[in-house]
Image (tube, rainbow, N blue to C red; front, side, top):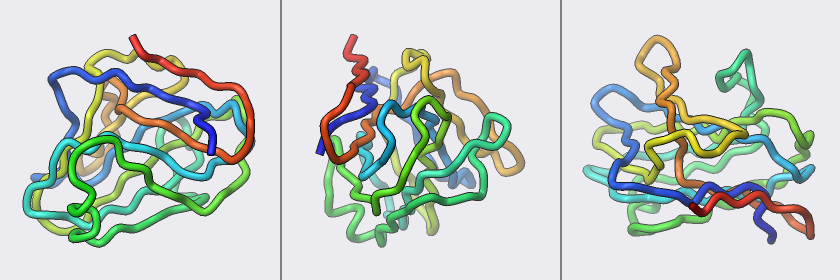
Length: 160
C-alpha cells in the first residue's frame, strides 16, 4: 500500500461533528488512478456515533450523491480505534488523476466526534467542508488525512 496524497499538519484546533451537524468532507485531487483506503486523524469520540467514510465524485465544488466506495463502522467499533491516525480500508475503485474527489464522513446517532485538522488551507488540491443543515460551508482549512493506493507511484506530502 502506497500513500498518494497526505496532509499531515495539525494544530490545536479540531474539526467536529455533533449538535445537528452530521456531515463533513475533504476534497482531494489524486495522482494515482485508484484508491484503496484513507487515513483520518481521530482526536476523540463522545457518546459514540456510527461513521460511514465514502469516496464521492465532485458536483460543482461539493460532494455529489455518487458514492464510489464506502466503509461503515458501528459506534462501538469506531470508538475501539482510540486516538490517532486511523486507517480506513475501502474497496479499491478507479479514479481519474487530476480530478477532484471527496472523502465524505457521515455520522448517525448522538454524540460528537473530533478530527484533526490544520486551521489554514495548506493542501492546494482540496479543502474541508461542513454541512450546516442546509448547505455546505467552506471552513478554509484542511483535515489531517492520507489517501492510499496499491502499487508504486508519486506522492504529494505536506508536512510543514
